[in-house]
Image 1 (cartoon, rainbow, N blue to C red):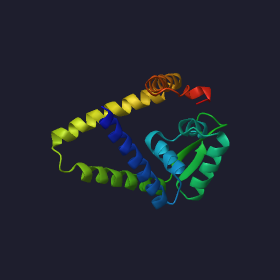
Image 2: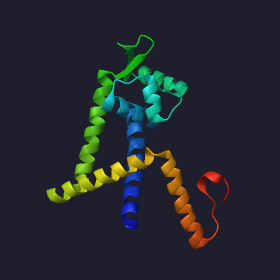
Image 3: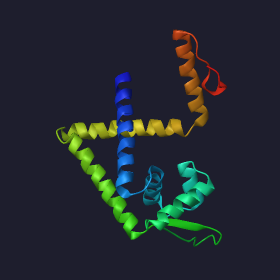
Image 4: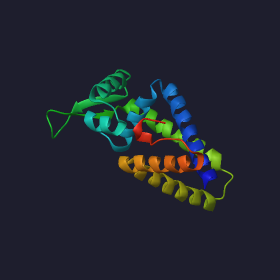
Length: 171
């Protein structure tokens, strides 16, 4: 299982590298790419919803949206149900760029698994779906995440002798 975890971690690192390269190709930052992806997936979104999803402050999202709007990738429109709020949506150009980026990603993944049988690709898809679900569940439980880290550190402390709890600040 440790080898599988190492391979999943390698895929995650490669995906981060890919995202940085795609951001550079699109002429925006990595956070902007994440915002564009969120808007494309579930948009239009309010700036506060986007801030929550990206883990950013309101002023940071305002600056991010200013940059994306200046690049012609998003537009802010009045919220139809809440006059005090706006909705952020992709422009036609923004949507085209995101579709092209997702298609390129799909082609790159397809090229990597082209030699595998359709059955193996299906099984891999199911396994990766399970891994993604488990990681999302852990990420959605901050107390469980800290508790899990503390348990891992306690195991290491028992086997190696010496480390402190993650949240204690000592070590």
